[in-house]
Structures are given as structure tokens and as C-alpha cells.
Length: 193
Ligand code: CTP
Ligand code: MG
Picture (tube, protein in one colour):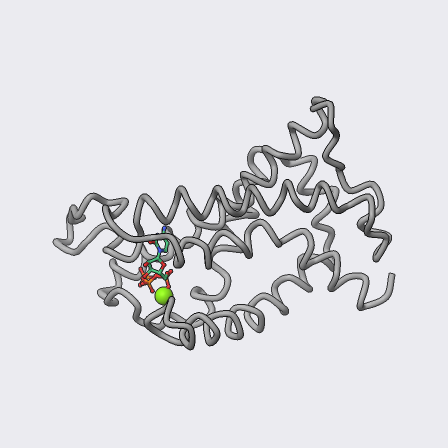
């Protein structure tokens, strides 16, 4: 496998997770997930930046992306890693249903990871939107991995090999910074990070 193969496979595998977060920012708003409640320390549990609509819409969009990927997979022969990528079949087999669940876990996990980071930020008395380097860029990756590792460990171990994990950890912060700059420019995000 060449470096390009590994990068392609890494982005492909992470795409449902990469989709969920920006879509939460596009479609989010309204009732916060913590319902406005405070934690024992008197500060918000998660804050107004984590909303129910964002969680649901982000997960749905990530899931949709995963299903589109399953449809595209047969036409993609870009990488060895992608050969054998579960394919969306017209007759929903147990195989493709489990893959739909997996991409859903990636999407949901990424938003839960993002919420977990907000929880930690609030405990550290950081305001909504405050910069929290490294965690801001990798919270959703760890969330997506945690959920798939717990509920789809065979799938996780099959696709997230050592070098894929290393590559994801390197390219995600770069992609994240680029995406957030774009989100800031089109005024979906309030801060450029
Ligand atoms: N968003 C949402 N629901 C979520 C996640 C995100 O509505 N579950 C929206 C919010 O409008 C949020 C924006 O996406 O402001 C950007 O997300 P993020 O940068 O993660 O939130 P912050 O506003 O920076 O808040 P925090 O400090 O808690 O990370
Ligand atoms: Mg933020």
C-alpha cells in the first residue's frame, strides 16, 4: 500500500464521522442536550453549543453519508484496503444492515465525543466556543472509535489497522482546521477553530 492508498482509506473510513460534526453545526440549534441544566460545580453540563437537533441531524447526515459510501464502494478500487468494503445491496442482507449500524455508530460516536469534550471544557470553566487545542481536533475521532470499538470491535479491528490509526490522527487536525476556517467564512461557525 502506498501513502496515497493509506490516506484515501483513512478519509473513506472516517467520512461518516467527518460528516456528522459540520452537519450538526449547520442544522443545530434550539433545545440544548443538557436542557439548560447545571452540573454540581454550578456550571452548565454541556452548554448551549450542544443541541438535540444538532445531535440528531448530525447523526442522520453521517449515516446517510455511510450509506452513500456503501453504494459507491463497488466502483471505487482506489485502495487495497477498500477492496471488500461492505457494499449496500438491494436486498438488505444481514451484512449490509450491520454496516449501516456501524456507520451510524461512527456518526453518533463522533458527536458524543464532541459532547464529552464540551463536558470537560465546562468543568475547566472554558466558555462555549473557547479554544481547546488538540481536544477540539480529535474529540470526535476518539468518540467514533470508542463507540465502534465497543459495539463493533471486529469491524473496528479489521479496518483500523495501526497505520490507518496513525494516519487519521495526523490528517484529522489538518482537515479539521481547514473545514472550520471554511465554516467560519460561510458563517456557520462563530470561531475559526
Ligand atoms: N452543534 C449543535 N449540536 C451539537 C454539536 C454542535 O447544535 N451536538 C452546533 C452548535 O451551534 C455549535 C456549533 O455546532 O455552536 C459548533 O460546534 P462546536 O464547535 O463543537 O461547539 P462550540 O460552540 O464551540 O461549543 P463548545 O465550547 O461546547 O465546544
Ligand atoms: Mg468549538
